[in-house]
Length: 355
Ligand SMILES: Cc1cc2nc3c(=O)[nH]c(=O)nc-3n(C[C@H](O)[C@H](O)[C@H](O)COP(=O)(O)O)c2cc1C
Image (cartoon, rainbow, N blue to C red; front, side, top):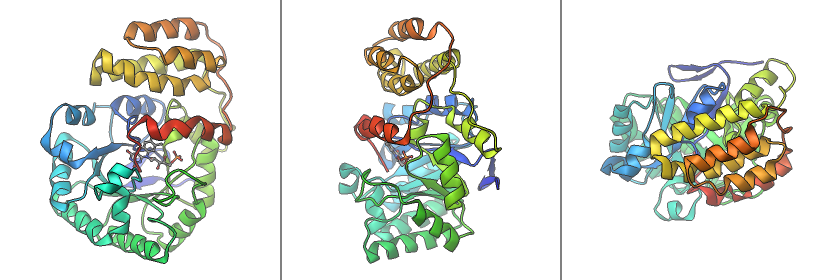
C-alpha cells in the first residue's frame, strides 16, 4: 500500500512532508523533525521582495544547515519578474526545490494580490509559474487550496493552474482541502483531493488539511490516495508524528507517546537550534510559542503551558525543563482531533498565518 514519495530527484523515506508554517517552520523546527523521521520539509512563505532586498528578515528566513535537506523554499509574491528573481536567490542559497504559494488566505496577503489571490487570477499565476520555470533549474512545486471559493469559475481557475503545473513539469502540488474564502472554518474536503488524484494520476499530490495526529495522516493517505501527506499543525510541538505515521504505515500499532526524557531532548535541541538562527532574546520569544505546543504531550500539560509562556531567556527555559522534565515517565496520550482543533484555534494569529 505504501509507495515511495518522489518529488523531482528526491525520494522520501515516508510519504510525508513537514509543511510551510508561518512563524514556525524555521530551520530549528525542521531539523528537530528530521532527526525524528521527517524526510522533507518546506519553509514558511517567504516574501519575494524580502528575499530580493535582503536584510535580517531574509537572513533568518533563509537559514539552512547540512541536515536540512531536501528542503523547499516557499515564495509569496504577485509579480512574475520578482518571483523569478527571488527563486534564483533561493536556489543560490542551496534550497533544493522552490515552492510557489497560491494558497495563503490572510487578508493582507490577498489585498496585495499574493498567495490565495492568485488562485482567482490564473493568468497572473501562470505568468509567475512560467517566469520562475525559465529562471531556475531546481524542481518547482505548488501550494494550492481547492479553489478561491465554491463557484464554477473558481473550479475552472484551479484546473487551469493545475494544467500549467503539469505542462511545466512541476514536481508536486500540495492541496489544502479548503477554499481560500473558507480560511480555517469547516472541515478540509479530503474527497476533493481524492477525486483530484483520480483525475490527475501523473502529478505527485500532497494532501493537506486537518492532519492533527498520525492516524489522520494514515486516513488521508489511504482514503484520498495521495502520494504524500502535508503535515502542518499536527507537527507543531510534535516532531514524533512522522515516526508514528511510519509505524502505522508498517501496520504496527501507534507507538506510546514520547516519554518525558525524549521530550526534553527535543526541547533542548529545538532551543539550541533556534539560538543559532535568532540569538537568545528572539529565540526565547520564538520558543515560548513552541513550548506551549510541546506541553500537550506532558501529563501536567496545563502547568507546563503556563511556565513556557513566561520564558524570556535561555535560563528561564532551562528552569522549565528542570521543573517538569527532569524525571522520566510516560508522555500524555494523543489528544483527539476535536481537542486538537480547539487547541489550534489560536494558530492563525500565532504567526503571520499563511496558506
Ligand atoms: C499558523 C499557520 C501558518 C501557516 N503558514 C503557512 C505557510 O507559510 N505556507 C503554507 O504553504 N501554508 C501555511 N499554512 C497552512 C498549512 O501549511 C496547512 O496547509 C493548513 O494548516 C492545513 O493543514 P492542517 O489543518 O493539517 O494544519 C499555515 C497554517 C497555519 C495554521
